[in-house]
Image 1 (cartoon, rainbow, N blue to C red):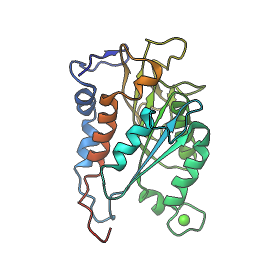
Image 2: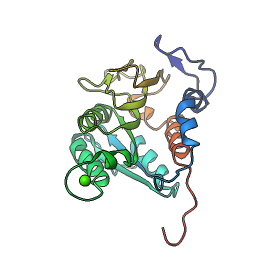
Image 3: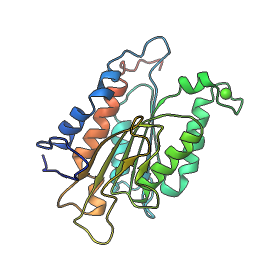
Image 4: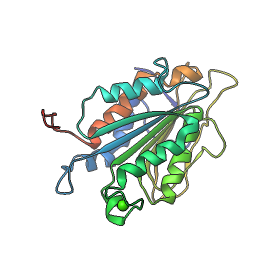
Length: 236
Ligand SMILES: [Ca+2]
């Protein structure tokens, strides 16, 4: 358990772990997660992670990669995880688009968009910037994003969360100089996007922040709640 500090924009009670605090803040998303997958088909979730700088999306020392591998290890039916370099955010968009375009006619119908997987995007450093670039591109295509998480995000325009994002969270540090992430993200449209919080993680450097267990717990737990899955069977 670590202590958290928070910017003035966040009024949450921050006694306790990141996970406990954020899941409390996430009551709306948890409530919706309790709705069964229902008649519209199996619950599908796409997770996109972005590493920053010149880091490889296969570099196991990167927190973003570690979170991705943990999610894959959930063995959750309908959960797809892909990690990219920050400069490949357009590839991530094309992958999402392919998944939604069920009839392969290179066009997204209203029905296809309604049946789109739940999309979660997170990124560290310049990967936080890429997360916002991707959400903006998805917004142009009228595709909603369930959750965007920025980890010591660095890059132009990365502090404004597009209106197609339902929930957004920002974690930053002030321990290491000069790489310091945005300390406050804000919603482009507060009626459509809830900023869960801007959380200062103390005594943690720029790289180490993405490896924080509490952040991994938050993302993992949120995704588990979004799509409570049936155990895999030999046929799926
Ligand atoms: Ca189509």
